[in-house]
Image 1: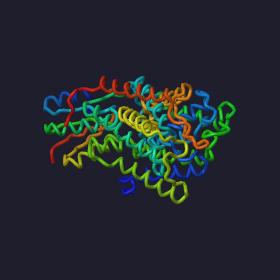
Image 2 (image 1 turned 60 degrees about the vertical axis):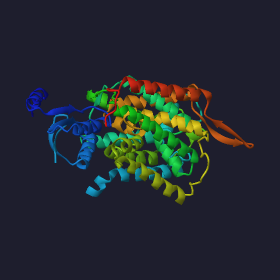
Image 3 (image 1 turned 90 degrees about the vertical axis):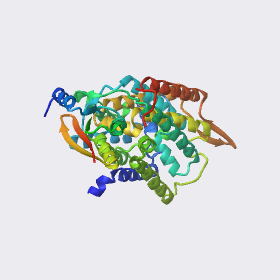
Image 4 (image 1 turned 180 degrees about the horizontal axis):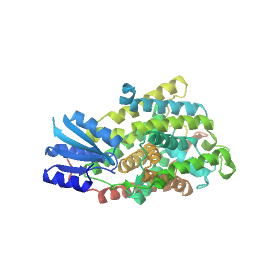
Length: 84
Length: 362
């Protein structure tokens, strides 16, 4: 598993916008995800806590016809979003 | 099993509606089978944080709800001690929410149970609640945030569940240390073990489904997402059916332990709705989260407990309407009305201080 610092370097090199939605109250992570996909810069990624925030975003992604690849992180998930 | 998981929020709502009806029938006050505001108020009374003699009983429903959520989150390895997201503001907002809920005489859950029993005043409260949630979404669209929470030690995470275990020990083994009402709503309660067991199940279901009254309306307005709303609707419909079958349904302008002051039913619930959105969940959600290690929710619950104490010590809580010799007595107090307005202004102030951008996102 990559450290946050190394992951950040990779994201910046590959120009992948990443938003950290961990630790935020409902419904902020979902709203941030909505903003992210509205910007239209794919691929992008969002870090989210496991549990309800993760489920909410997957449900919204399904409705928005985005493709999500998820990776388990130490304290949640990294969801990599691409247009379907 | 997959069907159950997918529609868990509906099953949760249905069970809560059922629990509300059963517990009211089994001895809890009328239309108060399950009320977070009233039960925290009664718990505050049992701890002698206030001295309203009719409102003193350590409600096992509160204990069961937190412990049910705690136990299931442990079993499913979803217990995550975290906190640090504007704790003192959450304490204050919890108190504001509680004070306003006690002006209305119910939390959002009791509002729905009252609606399901035919209490027209609760429908006006619902209008206020929806308005409050809509005002909350104004801030959310502009990036309102009480800032991030961070991982905390296990000791922090188990503090709230531990406090509930202490309350349970007091209630069962050392009741002489607590106050118990001899009459009034505090004296009306179902069997301890019935309340506790139903609440444990509710706690487990709410932990998994994240049911939330404020979230139900909020997500429709913000995201056109009806997922949480179906849960709230399930509470209403099952409770309505239950009330009709058990003859607890009666269309009245104000129900038992309620008042008919329409303006203040609406305004107080505007504040409750707004507070719930800014806090990230209604009182039921805060109690559920506090069992999963969320210390911010835990502090909000303590704020609600303090708010309940202040509400009765300072005469902010409404008195239920009663018809005495043809005259309607009771209703919101002047101090309560002022507290609602101050609460609204404080929440709006907190809202504006914590938005990230003045223009809303699309």
